[in-house]
Length: 130
Image 1: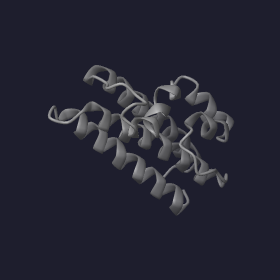
Image 2: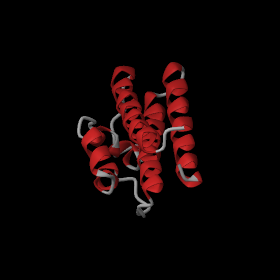
Image 3: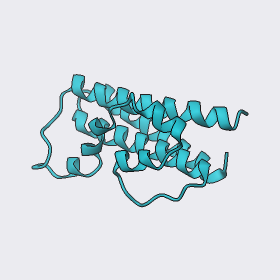
Image 4: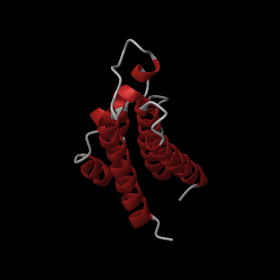
């Protein structure tokens, strides 16, 4: 795997770990975990694109990024509701743009991000087994 792809994947893992810690701290709002979950999924998809040598725009739009991925990864991501993650990239930064989220709803967002990372990792591992 190219170094930049490995870096993107490491950053994705870090964001997912942060999301899991944040959701476990009941003194913090679950929306913070949702933001990091979205970032984890976005960075994972960008890792796959970097590994394939596919240029990608500076965007947070997961659906647009997913369209740039390989046929195999696109097929894997079809079972992931990426649209659940998209609002947390930008909209969640503005209080009026997104309602507060509860822990159970945030856990669904985290699960979606984790599923995205698993799909990316499965495809990358099959391409570059180490």
